Length: 516
Ligand code: 6PG
Image (tube, rainbow, N blue to C red; front, side, top):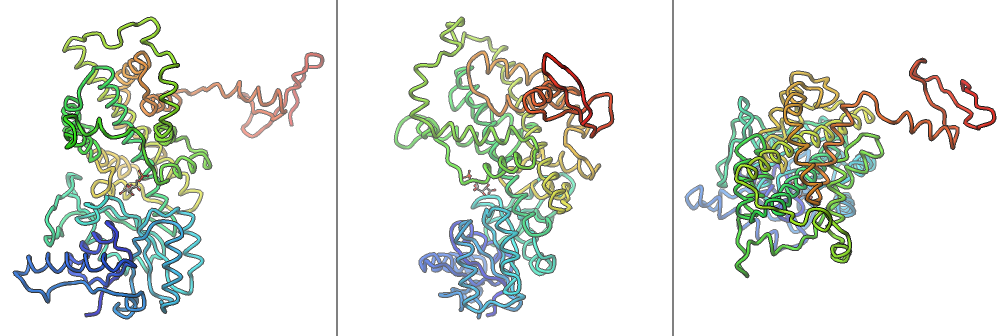
């Protein structure tokens, strides 16, 4: 049979996306340089389909291809080919091979990797005339890819029209009224109702930028939960199981999220090799593939404060410097070596609960700040690039399927639906009021962290971010004075029109003010 779409690259994501597409009635041509992977997905699909159809082997919806030429032969025109290969050089490698294999100008290549957005912009231009380079970032990990990811497509609008029915079919679905995900766990039983977690994001690069920011938020959200873990462990002396229970309780409230949910599960798991919790046997060195770093770099380049996201990237960097931490752990004094000899005095049940409640509020506030940073970053980048991003849509498609999915995204959706021109999330009353109500709890947590000597860079930096925006006046007046003093960099005055520049001659002999 003629295939509707092709999947090139059958790692976990590619394989599961292909199976998901087939579940929705589309025929998929599959290819990987590793033939074993091709056979594996063909067999899995055939088996799953046979189970659903009561043994009908002819119902299978995949075609194995042993070359890119064969992929092109098997596809209906204009062809749609999905790339699921590692970001970077492999994407261009496959594109070049597709050109050699005879791809045509109106065929569509959809890059689903975590590509750097500027590479995507360059590729769209580079391949113009040879094929349409389209992109669709995917979030949701392997389960998301299999049963409903969040998809962030961008590029040629006509290409999107072609791909949209398949994308809307395979994406995670959300109940339009509640904003809650419609869950589905078995194969071959596609969910068709609900709002799909995919929407056209904008011109080339926009989708990958939005996915990059999603990952920046993901880094911060994960680090916030890790800081809560350490505070409960070191501050209250809680075991992994006790912390898992706290997280499970939080997961039922305003902190409900996929990441909170899986963190509770990670903490619950026993190690098969020892009698300890598995988490305590996992080495405390965090990996990263770069998307969080790109978000932080972009925020610095654009001049959009995103300290909580940047701190999350630094936290991973500090974690990798284990030998240095080992050396310094015996040399740098903490509060236990100074005035307070007992870091965790026996707290009453009531005090423990107060600590947990304050931490829950602190986490919520810091989380709001990191989303505010991410959305402002997208707004500033979008304005710079003329992308016309729709933030209500972006919040909507993150409500399910993706790694940062959380009920909280429904509140963000509502804020942007009510005011599509919202320039900062904290200007939405629902958010500034909930932060104002919780901010003292946040301060209590930061004080406790500081006094017990437990690092909480994301919770703490988010509070500084909040306090910075609370200040109508910041000390940048002094900073401008310093700059003018040593470098004649000039300054504006509070009593003169904006843009009017002044320089003060700071010399003791002849102090004078000049309008520049
Ligand atoms: C997702 C994830 C996914 C992946 C990232 C994170 O949205 O499904 O973000 O893209 O897990 O690559 O990777 P690192 O933590 O390794 O940077």
